[in-house]
Length: 60
Image (cartoon, rainbow, N blue to C red; front, side, top):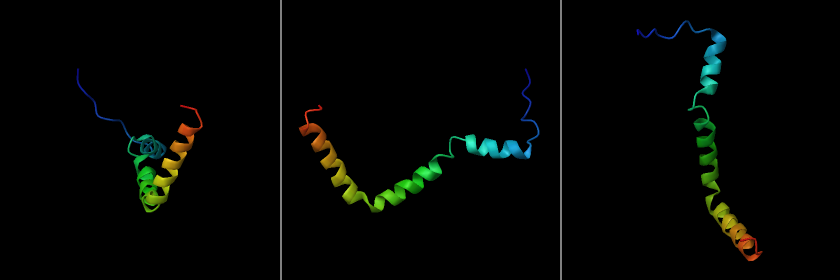
């Protein structure tokens, strides 16, 4: 069986292909990680406090 390459790409399909690409979510996630890195210290204490409260409330 011979493999035929991809057919002609229409302009609308090019945008859909980029949006559906698995790499597309990496860009906003990377930006979010960089922003969150600036708040790392307070967020870590908030997470520890939340987990402590969850544990002490008897939910575990």
